[in-house]
Length: 446
Image (cartoon, rainbow, N blue to C red; front, side):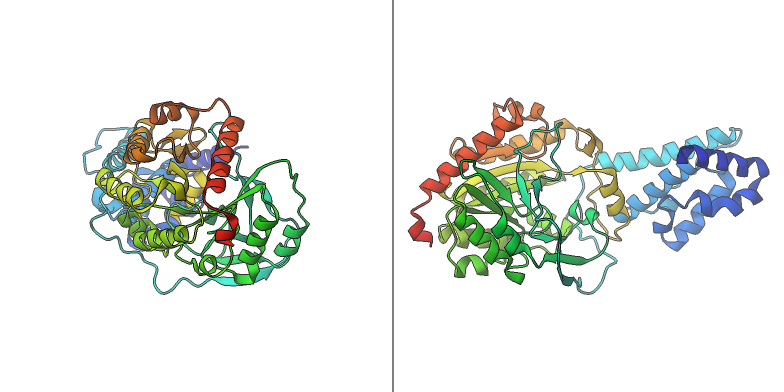
């Protein structure tokens, strides 16, 4: 029998037997909710209210989620916003519905109100983040398709190479951290040997990224990872190898010969987003300075405005960022620009709510988006169109694309779209290869 049916029947049994039975079974009712994520005072308050209203499992689940969200966003607590309107003369079912509806309206109003990032949000975590790194032998190489690829979205068919698994950065919206259940960073002791043994078709062009399961540069050359990757790119000129990062750790790239088919790309956001939602990553100035130094070395760079975030000052802040990027880099140095935004699975949302972070990242309208939860299309079109217009001088000279977004958004943003994922993949590879050929003689870089 479905778990929700069991919970509903259990609730009805408790209710029929009275408040004493309900009180005894309360712990069971909230076991699968976020009740335990609430502070002690709010748990005591909700427990008292539950004994009065006899909330069902589903109602307790919803109220607990609202309480956790309010705490994360730095808003008045569940106790402060609890409805005080009279429910006298109402049936028990009507009384419960009035409370849940009032709380839901309160939180949905906040979701619809653009968040403010002018006041710092403190986090209950303290001390330095301690990463336990261990040399980890794995059975497979880790070469596969992009883990978020979907038939519902236009996808570039990126291949991913998991040189490292799990990330030491602490971005509030991160989906990678949902795949792992501890703070261990996994290195493959046999990575270099398995990479050497990988057989690729020399007649085919491969686009491979290493920034899906961990940041590509934050670990530097630990356990020889970058040695193995650069040697792999050098031996396979038909591979476009993309290192994606939010790091400033470019020492290896500056001190070692880098093959011309290696591209280094940075994920960018305004500094207020980095400060509040991308904890422990390099600051905006540090990222842009790192990209500038890498480009000066003759290495192609790229920029991912992903995830773009809608907040009170988003238009002005992104305009300033886009201007800095356009003024700081020549089109001949830039292979790509991508746009994307916040996209969540339910498991990622639950991880955020149980993370202990104070974050406003979920203070947004969550609508169904190709099987996941994201902004409504109208908000996405605002964000992406603004960003594309902000880089008008690069149109037709740098490859632009939307990452993990539906095809229906392409034409309104870019004025064109691709008929299939394969067509996008082919156009992307052709553009990158052209930039690689034009970026300078290999001898200049090696």
